[in-house]
Image (cartoon, rainbow, N blue to C red; front, side, top):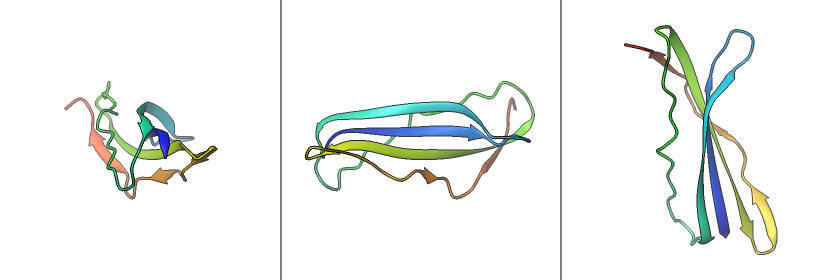
Length: 87
């Protein structure tokens, strides 16, 4: 596998629809060996109000395998996280 790009997105749960509040792409250029751990610990969102809000994340990756461009399924966090912003 080559040229992996891991994308992590953070969404805030809204009344009518969810809003994307942050996204980060982590690129790993070149050859990637099997079982290599690639982490994304940079994606964050700073709360700007004091309301309790719920958030979840979605992660997916793209890479080149041989001459084919492949994508993973989108993975959603198991639980939403409620945060007291501004406290």
